[in-house]
Image (cartoon, rainbow, N blue to C red; front, side):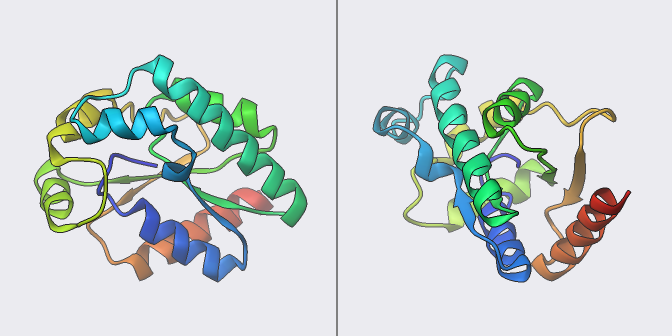
Length: 164
C-alpha cells in the first residue's frame, strides 16, 4: 500500500515471485470512469473508491482461498479503505506501507511512462494517506530502500506474523 509512485507494483511482483503466488494489481480493478477521472487530474472520492475496493477485496479473498496466499498492490491510503478491503476479502490481510519523501515520489512519478496517475495528484494522495495505527496488521517500509531489502524485511515480518 502507499501513494502512487512508491514502488507497490515492484514490491508486489517480487513478493509474488518469492512466495510463488498470484499477484493482483489494484489498478486493474478500477472502473473506466475512475481511470478517466484520474487521467484528467481529478482525485477520486470515497464514493468512487468503494466499488473498486470491494472488487479488489473480493478478488484477493477468492485468490487466497484458492491458492493459500495472494499478494496485491493497492493504495489503501485510509484506515477505512483497509477495513473495506479486509471485509470484502474475508481473509486476514497483512498490509505493507511503502513510505518515503514526497520529492522522491514525485521524481519517480515524472520518470515513468504509460501510467494514468499524473504527478499533479500526489499532493491529494499524501493528504489522504493515514499511516497505519499500532492496532493494524501493518508494517511501514522505507520505499527509498532497494527492492531486495524491502522483500527480505517484508518476508521476515510476514513470517513472524504467521507464526506468532
